[in-house]
Image (cartoon, rainbow, N blue to C red):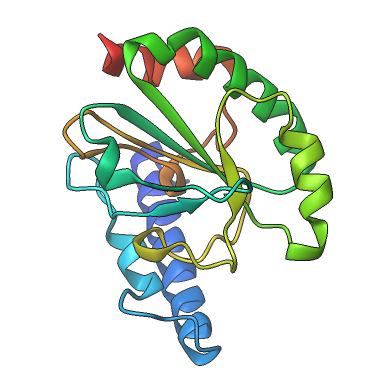
Length: 185
C-alpha cells in the first residue's frame, strides 16, 4: 500500500507527464509560440508568474504585467462548463468585495468566437472583465486541458497558487478565504 507522500508524488509526476504530452501535441498543431506547454509543468509557486494579456469582449487589453502591485487571479472557463457556472458567481462576488484591497480578476473564456453572445450573456453581471482566450494555449500557463483552472499572482508578480497542482480546481468561498485573502493583507 502506498503512503500519502508516494501518492502525492505519483500524482504530481502524472500531471507533469500529461502537461508535457499536451505540449507536444500543441506544438504539433502549431500552437507552440515562444513558450512550450512543457514550461507550464515548471510553474512554481514563489517564482515569477508568466505574463498574459486578456483581450476583453469590449475591446480592452489588460496585461498581468500592468497589474503589478495588485493580487491577480486568472480564471479559465467556458459557457459549456458546469462547474464554471457554480464557481464564477462566487468568484465575482469575492472580486467585488475585495477590489478596494487590490484584487483583480481576469476571466479567459475557452469558447469559440461564434459563442461570443453566450459569453457576454453569462458574464454580464460579473465584477471582472472577460475575453476569449482564442485557443486552448495560454502562454506560459500551457495548454488549458481542464476547466475551471485558476492561477493567483501576488502583488510582486510571483505565482501564489498554481491551478494545475490544486486538488480542488474550482474556487469555493472557503478556498478563496484560505488562499487569496491572506495575499490581500
